[in-house]
Figure 1 (cartoon, rainbow, N blue to C red):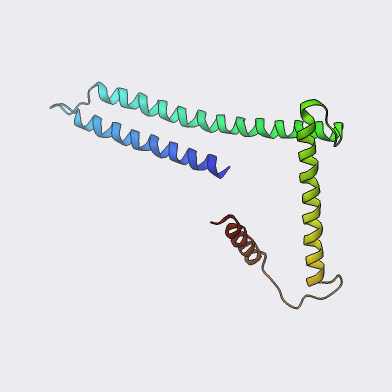
Figure 2: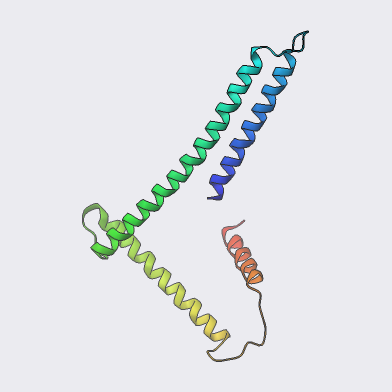
Length: 148
């Protein structure tokens, strides 16, 4: 989603720059009487068009996100109703989904075991750790693993 927001921010920035450029063009076309020629009218129309483009782009991105969410839900329901063994061209995808789900369960079990080894059930906490600091450490480790 942040990638979408970055694109939108860039697009809006471009629109603002174009609006400023159009305003500068309008000032350059002022005649001796101080009236602005038809460049002002064209600039105004362009600015309105750019604003409509930005609004439509935001709406388009919202609709694309909603469609992805719907497709995800359809796939999840299909997988749940069919079971772990799909038919036809779904079979490899279902197998991949089952393998990934098993990896997730294994990782969850491993994390639970590590937590239990550090903090046995019923033991009192002797050190308070802020969640924010923990998240920072995890993020740094993930970045290091990706080579960032």
